[in-house]
Length: 586
Image (cartoon, rainbow, N blue to C red):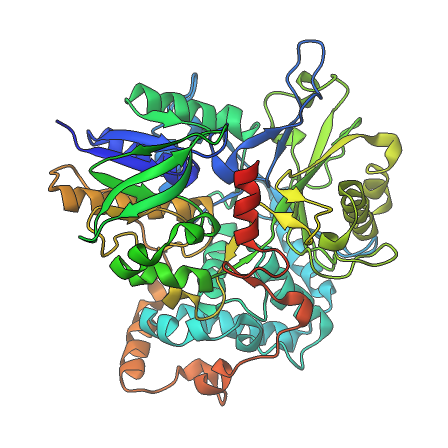
C-alpha cells in the first residue's frame, strides 16, 4: 500500500509538494483553509462585477513575476498540461521588455530589460545606459556601488552566511553620507521592490545574492529576465494545476483549516485537527505530514509538545513579517504605461505596478460589464510611511478602503508623466479592487490576513530546514531554508521539493529525489571565491572591503521608526497572530 501523506496548506508550496509526491506514488491529501486553491497566488474575483454572462473581474493579492533565475517553479510548470501548449502552463509565460523608474513628471526613465533583438533596441539599450546617469547618482558613487556588487560576487558562501547575513544592506553599501539619489535608488528602492524588504533591516546576504541574480539575468541572450503570465493566475496556472493533481489521485480538501497538531509523547505526529467553514472539527491521520502553511499560520499551532520535539519551531515567532498587498485599477481605456514593471521610486507607499492587458490573451472586455479595457495592477509594500494626501496618514491608519485607493492613486499620478497620470482619473476609472486580506477600519488597527515574511539580518538562524527532528513532519513554506532564500513562489516550490526529499528518505522510497538548483553565478569569479575562502578560514576580511571591517558593518544600525517590521508573535500594529484569529472567524 502507498504511504499516506497529508499536505497541510494548498498554496504554491502545498500544491508543489502534492505534485512531487503524487508523481512518486504516494497517497496524497491536501487541506486548504480557503474555498479556492492557490494561496497568495490565487486570482481573487471581484464579486458581483460580472454581467451579461461574463465572469467577474479578476483581482489578485499581488501581481505575478517570474525572473530568469527561477529554476524550480518553471520545472514544475512544464509538467502541468495545458491545451495547445507544448510545455504546459510554462508556455503561458510571456516576456516583458521594459522597466520604468518613475519619480515625477520629468523623471520617468524607461530601460530595456531583455537582450536586444534589433539594431533599434541596441540603440535603446545604449541610450538607457546614458539615461541612467540622469538619476543624480555621481560616477564616483556608482563606481563604489559596482565595487560592492563585485565584493559579493567574489565572496565565498561561508563568508556570506557567517558575515554578510549579519549586515544590513544600508550599511553594506555605505548609504550614510551618500547622495539622496544613491539612497533612494540603490538602497531603499532596490530593497523594497524585493518583497517589501527595508534597507535598514534586510540581510546583505539575501539582497546581494538576489540582486546579483537579477542583474545577471537582464541582458543575457540565453534567459528571459522578466516574465509574466498571459492571463489571470487561476485560469492559466492554478486551475490546470489542480486538475492535473486530481488526475494523479490527489484529494484536495477546501475550507479545511488546520487548527491543531497532535504531537505525542514519542515525539511523532499522531494526527491533525481540521475545521470546516462551519466550524465543525475532525481528526485526520497519515504516515507523514507536510506542513505547507505560512509562518503566521504555523506559530499559533506550535504548542509545548511540538517545541519540545523540534525546538526550532519555537523560534518561528522571532521571524519578521511586513505588508505587501495588491490594488487593481480597472480602466475604461487601456494605458500601457510601460512594457513591463514600473517602480515608483520615491512613492511613500513603495509602489510598483504592471499594465496587464498588453500581456493577456483573453481581453479584459470578456470580464465584468464588458467596458473594462485595461488594468493597472499595483503592489503596495509600505503601509507605515506618511501619505501624500492630507492629513498625511500611513495607509494602515486610513479610515476606509476608498481612502487607501485615493492615496495610492495620488502617489502614482504624482510620479507619472501627465498623459499616464490622466489615465487614472475618475473619468477613465471603471472600477477598483483592494486585496480583501486588508481589513480596515479595525478596532485594534488595520489587519492584514496574509502578511509577507521578510529576510532581516540574522534571521537565517531562526529559520528551520525542511526536514525536522520529528521523523514524520516536514516543512514546505517560504520561511524554510533554501537556495532561493526569499519569500517567493520559487522559494515555496524549492522548500516543497526539500520536504518531499525528506519524505522519500524517511519512507525508504526508491523514487528519484526532487531536483534542486543552487543559485548560479559566473564561473569567471570562482577563483576569487576560492581565494576568499582561504582568507575567511584565516580570519581575514575580504580584500574588497577596504578599510571598512566586517565588525564595523555588523554594528547595529539605527532603524527609522516607520521602517520597523513586526515579529510573527507580536500583537502590536499588524499582528499576524491576530490576523490568524480573524481569518479563523471568517
